[in-house]
Length: 309
Image (cartoon, rainbow, N blue to C red; front, side):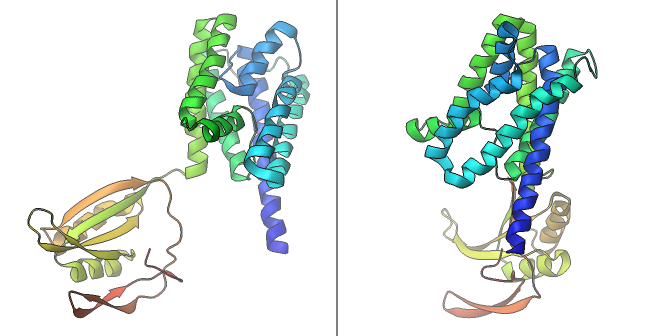
């Protein structure tokens, strides 16, 4: 009971902090500089220019049908509770902070406002997503259209957000629209940074004829778990072994050095992965497996559970 409550509490704290930061971002960087980087927030900034309606209230009105659509299509009550909470905190705080931050400017430089507006919005959005919520908006619309039509979400975002930026160019001028595109681009990068972390996981495939020696060296020297499976060269029909492991970026040079030292003829390929989970290493233990009718023993570091990685 307590772990579940604590997990939910952490999620709502993340959503609250992210929503408040989004509200600060609109009042500090976007609205004062007429930057409308797509979505419901950009649409509300454009509407505010013509009507003077509060930006937060306008966002709330536009988000209501989208939240209902998301509830019926995407998520049920868990989606509704967290998304509705994020929308209310974000939209209502936008109008409340508009009074406190009226006339407050950090810089008059448009490029700085565009860049930092994108960074702050991306970090804040990432926190909301980490808490299991969304800020509704075109994100829900994009997911629903993707499910109904099969069009990639990225293309839907490009169409919807691009349309808002285009209208912003007609209203505020094309220079502001170009700055809004910068904000939109940085927004996406910063959100990915929060969701995926600052570093990229390295994935390594090693084709070798000395799997026991190479695998043991990686395990003992680098303390990295290794998975192996047999392979056959399509041209030579020669039998080989593929070793697979994941590691952090700083470990890659050490791995290459160890592999080249043990088997200079090994073929090694390094790729990028966005996230790795599991693989909590316990003490190495002996594992028996059969290959070509012969029983072999190799020492492998297994996680605490099933599998090797």
